[in-house]
Image 1 (cartoon, rainbow, N blue to C red):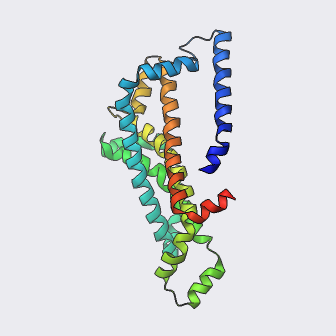
Image 2: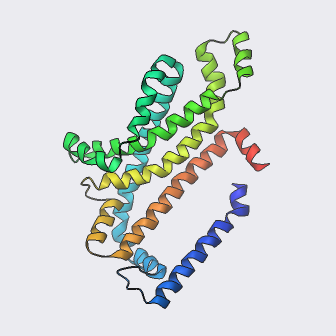
Image 3: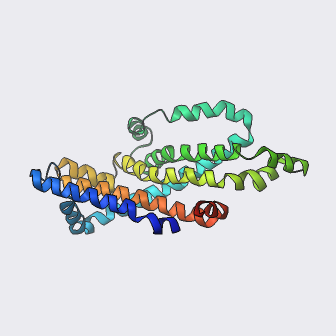
Length: 254
């Protein structure tokens, strides 16, 4: 958090500069608003239409948060099972990698056919997006525990469960949070994609309606909201990490 306070102004300054260049380019080149609106027009539309946008925003936040929690729980459970059962890991881990090679946008219509237009296919989409980064990060954390610390625990007579709970899990927390950060940003994208499956509200629905009516300014409003939600989710996980992983915070602040 101290790093953000000291150096966070730099990316903010770069972003402001890019927005100014964008604004000047649109004005000087006289680009039609339906093709590329100026940032001032986008912000004005966002403020004026916020009341109508709020239900869509609430729907997406709820869906993304719920899917993120379920996806990360599945990811952590999968990582723990594969770590504690090496035989299962050798059989299942390649299948997990293959599962990430199937584009979600292609899989989404199949989920609608199998499960309908309800909440379940949307949660499945977000879960598929979120669980893999958490699984891989957690397994890497378990695997990177120093060998001498494991040897010391074994000499002290620790069981496999004690080894995991007292050494491997605490040591892997930093890696787990790295996976959670990635999944937090992916969850918003997954929620928007899932809303294209036939939801009644959400940022994905708002974006689809704006695109079909050539309201490019509203499309950019939706894009900026998605970016801000991703940053917000990332910040929440970063804050939780700073509170829960004390040694990691001290190391970063050095």
